Length: 616
Image (cartoon, rainbow, N blue to C red):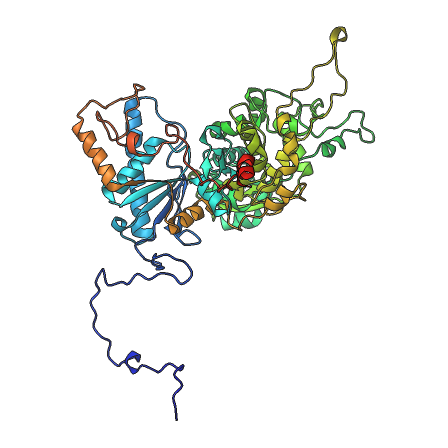
């Protein structure tokens, strides 16, 4: 009987034995093999030392993990259970106070970074390169503190600084687009063309998660209801809850409770159309006056400042009347409901009360009862208190993000349009058809569709004046149309991660609207960093040797580099010496634009006609 040579023979030496052979683990005994699908020698090991650490540090929430993975290993609040932010947009003016703030911040950051490596990732930082997903407006002194902790304390080999907007755009499968990052402290829009962030055209607004939280707290203090726990079991059975209901104590609305309400029960409602309010202007039967849904027109009242005074709210009965006259903003921008500003509200009704009546009338959301811990002064009851959140507060608390306050506080839609106005004309159509929304605040249900509606409303043609008043027969001046240059782009607006895109009006909109991968907006930047680490790419990389050389040069310079630019801003930890951060850490405000993606190859030009005739 012949043996088929094509049949492999069984090697008995590969069979398992009864005893396990004793082997010695050597660091260089691992064989590096290439993947059969990719021509690379990268080890496809989950715990291989070539996997980089992707660190996305925010002012409140941090996301950390390894490169090549689809989601972060750990997501935690850097400020602890209290929910406070590690840093804010404000900084002390005096040098001594600023240095004290930086020392406290450095201690907190050191604890967070050590927890990342030793508790969240369980890895040795000495053998791991780090990709730092940085915000374009991250202050240089914060990057210096993080670099000093990573290099000097944890001794990482290198740190790569990559823009969060660019990484998020790469995670969506594009190299050109307009990225809106709506985080906790501010909302930032950055145009990117061929992997090149156009930093001079960056626009920002402070209307973000922090303003939404303060505004939600102010609304709950005014219109929420709190039912304290009963003092005894008999009182809980005999006294109805409606009798025990009071105004919401400020101690109940902690940062944790506000975040819980904002992330679990709040959503973004559809914009109110003018027809909805116009239908209520006709007088009812037996009523000689017309009833209008809008509050009285008061230019000295707006929503942003109403949210700012939440920290100083006085919980007495005449709060509404006192603050209605002293506020500087209005809760609803009258530009959203044109033609309905001139009506008058009910007699003796403040602007805020008329606003609550209008929103409550058009809202179909139900009230939510939440169990909360009573304030320390009232912890003598039989359990936890109950916080009643009105349905219209759940639906309309996010209106503060879509109603701009002033020039420095544009809405999230206006900041996108302002960025498009500053962008080159030949790039506007491409950028408008590739808008990407990232950050934690866009996780609110209905945020992205509402943003699409606000962009369409702002760019649409304004209503024509009904009765122009022209003294001496002069022609009436036309209304100021801020976004008239962007009106031809109206059919091209498309948000690539819109979960429910509207019917497309053009081919670019149909190609891009809702076509991004189904990643959550808050994780897009980290996922882009994971892809960059797996491909061994990233931003500007700073090696530890270069950092040590810069620090050695700083120590040798003596005390001559205390304040190089003369602005009184001495970097933290430098004391009377200079700082290496000004020389080796990337700063987009002082460096030229990055190179970007390589140019597409061009076809060779045809030979001239004279050369062809001579050859013939």
